[in-house]
Image 1 (tube, rainbow, N blue to C red):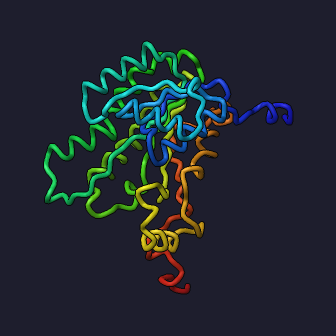
Image 2: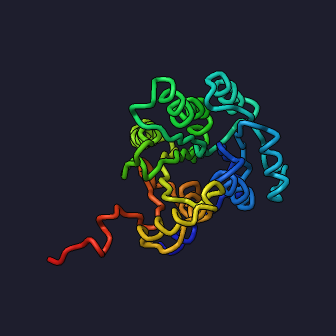
Length: 265
């Protein structure tokens, strides 16, 4: 038994991983972390030039990164990216669907085009890219698919109805696709980040303190906080985890769950 347990490794060496949204925020951090862990990354960004700048600025080995340029809001771009993923960048054994948009607009102000764009980037593109890679994932017998969800799906947020609905759809897709791929060795999971501190938020001190107040972990979470569980999901050691939503939010709670609102008894 001890020998069996010791043979399970959280290792990404030799993995060939597709990652979308690599030029900023969570995706930018993950790009460097994955490469430093020994993986080759097929990186998708709207601009190949922007992706190359990140590779240079972050000191990432360019030999371990291939770049696909595509605007996920454009279905034709997605078709081209899916074809590239299935052909010239094949085979990949893991998919990380990180790219997303979260425009703020109330339901009353939004229209069909607004909802279609949010779902195109956050859901439809991930579906098309996953479909194109399924033969490679299932044939390698150790395939991994990780969709990125959001606590907005669970907690709600004013003016983010389209975003929350698209992330909720990814969670539902996770559970169903895990069953569809039963017996193939491919796992499908949904990583749900909490309030991760990224570049666009770093100057908003008031928001930072308010968020920390509602967390059990009394600091702002940063992108590297996601890497441990992500490495587990991608590795051999995570091969029994599938169909799950895994939340990394520092114990983020609704305000009414705080001690100051709790009643005795």
